[in-house]
Amino acid sequence: MRILLPPSEAKRPDPPRARAGHDGASGHDGASGHDGASGQLGAARSVVLSALVEFAAAPGAAQALRLPARSAAADLAGNQAVRTAARMPAIERYTGTVYEGLDVRTLTAAGRRRADASVLIFSGLWGVARADEPLPSYRLPAAASLPGLGVLASFWRPFLDEALPSLLGDGDGDGGLIVDLRSTDYSAMWRPRGALRERVVSVRVLSSRPGAGPAVISYPSKLGKGKLARALVARRARISKRAHLVDAWLGSGGADGWLRADGSVDLLI
Image 1 (cartoon, rainbow, N blue to C red):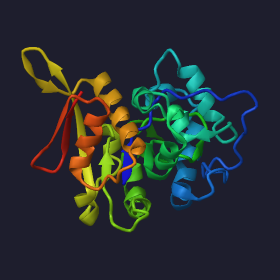
Image 2: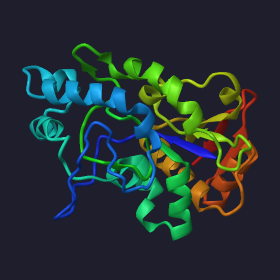
Image 3: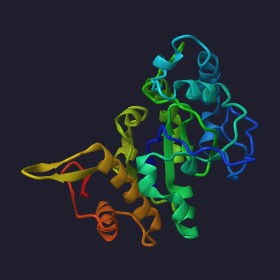
C-alpha cells in the first residue's frame, strides 16, 4: 500500500539546536537510511531550489509565489535560507489540517514505521518526498510560478512520470493499493497511467448537510483524509482491497462509506 498526501503550507518550526541540512539540492542528509525520492529527483529539485532562492529576493516574488501578505516577509526569508536550514522528517514538518488528522506523533512505533514506508508527500519544491525524508521549512505551493520554470505543477509532471513507478512499487511485490488523498493542485502534478491507474484509489470525504446531499466541505474533508491515513497505517491487517478502506474508516469512527462504479471511494464523516 502507498498513501499519497498533499503537503501543507503550515510547517512545524525547528526545535532548538536543530540539525542544519548539508545538501539542499537533494533534500536528504542520510538520516532516513535511503535515497528515497531524492535520489531520483535530485537534478529537478536542484533546478527548482536554485530558482526559488534567487527569485525569493526579487520584487514581486510574494505575489508570484502566492504567499499571504501576513507571512510573506518571513516566508521569503525562509525560502532564501532553505539550502542550509535545519530539517525534520517530512511527515512531522507539515502541520496543516490533513496532518492534524494524521497526528503522526501519537502513532505507535509500528504505526510510525508503516507511515514512513507507505506515505509519499507531494510538494512544489521537492516534487515528492517520503514520509521520513528530512526537509527544511519552506513555502512554495504547486500553483506558484518561478521564472524559467512556469507553474510548478506542470514543471514536475515529466519528472514524476519517470520517478513515481519505482517509488510506488510495493514492498511485498504484489502491486498493492495506492490511496490518493491529494488535493486538486497536487493531483495535477502526477496522473497515473497504465497498470498504475488500476491500483490508484481516489477518495472523497463528504459531510452531511441538512436538507441536501453529502458534499465535500474543505476543513472536514481535509481532516477526514488525515484520519483515514492514520487509520490505514495504524491497521495491522493488510490493506489490499478498496473495501478495506471503508472498513478502516468505519473502524476509526467514520459514519459511512461506499465504493463508486468508477473504482473511487466516498466516505461520510
